[in-house]
Image (tube, rainbow, N blue to C red; front, side, top):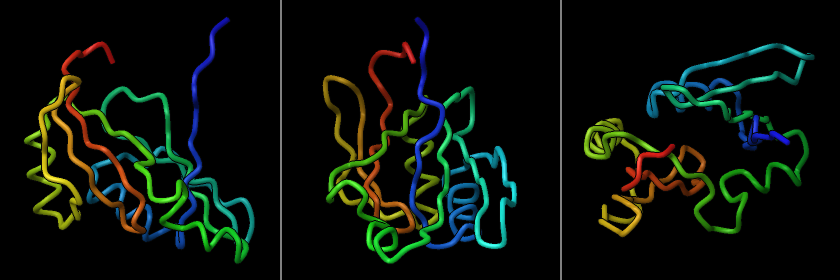
Length: 133
């Protein structure tokens, strides 16, 4: 049996501001932006490099969904972004105004820091010790 995660839905307030953040601040590539209706689009972004998993930017359509923007996991780190050069990406993200909530630390599994996306979701930026990803 072979399986893989294809997309992870991330509830956003606005498609265009989310696309701008992920493509300009995090250097993700816009994989797809297809209009499905007057209010709904299919928007996929992915980190640079060979990533098979995309974020599906899903615009909140109800008050309940809007209430989850920026806190999809109750304040826990939500997503984990691996990098092949921690200091390159950390420095660029600082210059681009990304808010870091924990300083860089060296752990057994690699160099790591925690940052917020444009809505406040928490992410780990990690350069893993083992490069089997």
